[in-house]
Length: 316
Image 1: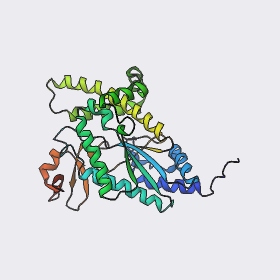
Image 2: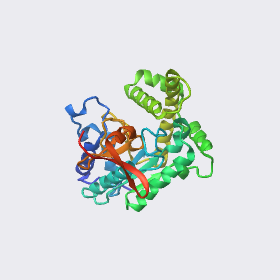
Image 3: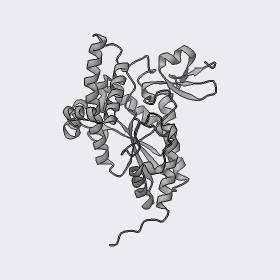
Image 4: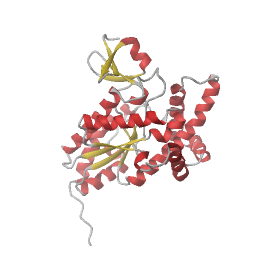
């Protein structure tokens, strides 16, 4: 059977879809604003988008993200999703809606929630991860975010214990620590990721019994484990969703196989809703900051009977 000819408008439509993502890009370059990126800088994403456009199908995005809340109470309000997750999910659903104006089949966003992948390494109890992911699904249903869905380890290995799931994933897909150490020494992107994860682990640990230097050594060791599991999870997601356009909440360089995406405004390029708290400024604009910083200049707002975010009363 002859191949189906490509649609004449596929390149323009694919480029227009990617243009919608560019303003929200989380860039790895030190000064991305001085040399703005263009769609031509992302051939991998254009090719994957074009595959869906050619077939007149909804564009499928896969975003490994929304794992669990930080265990550090100085950074977050608790272990359940709050205003940060709610706004971020609404943003992603809105992005899919915007694509529909260009490509009538629209788009779908698969949230690949990876909390159980890292729970033992980030020192978060597995029941907290279950509660967090279940509440994500509840927000999606309650707020009518019909273009979003959640995928996690329970969708692959539902009958095994969490430790068994992690061991299975690690054995099947994780690179060796030796390979990662070599990449950290030679690859700038891997080095940047290693340093960023080490910093997060250090900041998230609030009850370490040893010295500061001992904690730093512990976090460096765990950072390699997190990267191993992250690579393993990425391979598993690709195995189950091989055609999806791959997104990342980590900063990504131009031309990478993943497109870094920023969910909400934050002073730190690495900030996420699950490591921070939302502070609404006097003009209503939300910003991600640490809870301790929000407490100093804002008042706590509750939603559905739970702490949700902070509201800043005056401009600082």
